Length: 153
Image 1 (cartoon, one colour):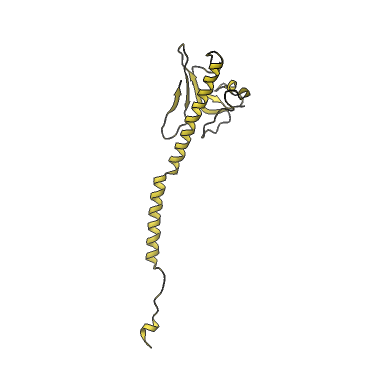
Image 2 (spheres, helix red, strand yellow):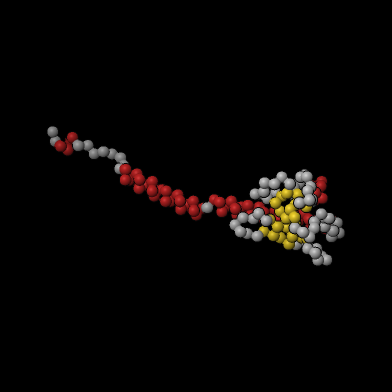
């Protein structure tokens, strides 16, 4: 017999080739995960929601003031305090803005911070200035990525 007829060439990949492909895929996957950074994307989305919620609360307070000849809700004080959730039991630690949600006239329900676990407060703070023409400040103290979300109007 001829030696070339007896020796068959094995088909397939060698172990080195398979390991090399796996290593390349792992490197590419890690680069994509770092570039996308899902945690940062979620934090940015939460902060965008917080900005929207702060403006929603502030707009509702100002609509109330317009309808009441410039008078702000009496519960808003000069000391910054958390806003009570819609329907939650009012405590001394939060500001009751139920006048805004009564009959859903100014806002259907007060928005809640995406990361709050409280069943009493919304995670947003509200205060008014001590000047004659009181200005309202609404802040989101739980903002992520070291951002400060505060609106004064």
